[in-house]
Image (cartoon, rainbow, N blue to C red; front, top):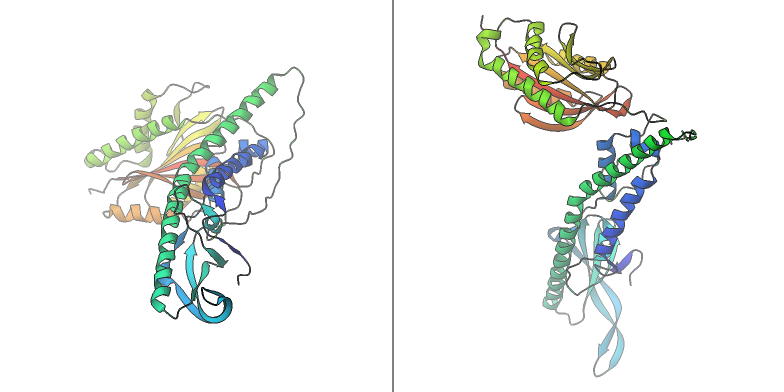
Length: 407
């Protein structure tokens, strides 16, 4: 007799319907979030949180680790001569470990084998029974093999459907989030144009409960927003940022190709070469400024006296100076979605070991959010946040150029 969490496997619900409802729940979560939360939250972190929350881990059975136990039970036996009687028989209880979101065990995939079995789920195992009616172990083994084949077929079909759902989920979250955010921004513009002011609620929850995680998933907390309102801020478009970095990279490669020309130059002189490359390619900002220099090594793009982009040119002097440079850059940037670049001139003969050190050390910075891309062996893109607020994100490129000392 079964007790506890028992059900007919791959039978009690429809997987397609379940996935559709899960997608709708994701959309409701975004729509029901506070307006200021959507407008202020770090988009990448929030989308990743929602993906972890609504994605599913497909079911995988581990038949190689299955085991059985034998018990004696009184069972009902239907004999064609003597009718129904109660007899003492050996019952084999099979335990099959699995991983995955346990709810999926109850759901019938769109393509399925017409079969089910009453099973019991305990922790990360399912169990079912096979009764040895005729004291014939071959019959027991054959029945077990048949059930395993059914489990394999249905779990394989379930995995395909769940993986397809997961593969498209992040894009759907992105689309839904962007549409909602744009809707709210448009509404704010309309409200600002009204002749009678609108009273706005500034109440934003400061803490959020942690939802129950799916089986074996990493626990992620909902990103917390510190600001109680939203102020639109200018941002440097991604394509413009890439164009800036590409010009810097091309110039840096020129340094490497002609080391004798640039050898012995100070950081400030090398910085000026970048400025000469950048200035002709970009029109002035709203204040009439394009790129300018501040101090000895900075390359700045400013808007209304605030830095939108800042590049810092440094000779490589070890990991401590590198981490201090990150701190320095982050202290200069205050706007949401600011852009930055650290341009490192490396004299060390072992250039690859410096790149390796950068990759190992940068993830240790307390403001580090994540790796974005590797455009080149020596051009790495990362995500950081300003001090004290993970929702104010800084895109940071680290660009290294080998200028060995020829003296």
